[in-house]
Length: 137
Figure 1: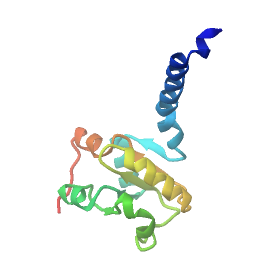
Figure 2: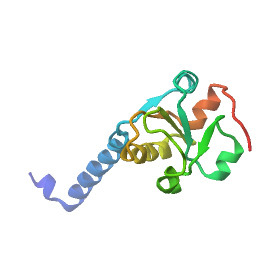
Figure 3: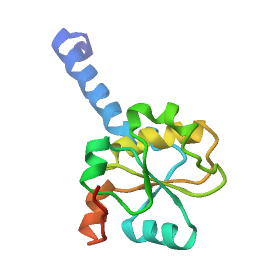
Figure 4: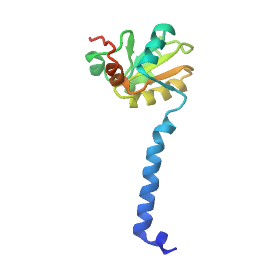
């Protein structure tokens, strides 16, 4: 019983619990958005006419982006949504570099009433790994 009363052991136990919660955070943040592969993303774009939102910075977007995607950087996403002319009832595909910013963007879109939100799992890295094209400029 003295194990839990030792300050060092108590601190180590607290660190273990906190780190465990941090590992679970991506599962909690995931929200209602579905995660799609590059193949599923191309199907969404070609068959469902998904709206593509790229939440990377303008500089990253200029270096290469998916054709017909709109640049709505995550930092300004809430204010840019009003002028983006997106339809809430149409599918939305969110893209970033690796998938992390897209998760936060998905939460914003869901809060704003978008019902069919998908995240390109792995971001543009996945897109490039699948040898799919980018547009520059």
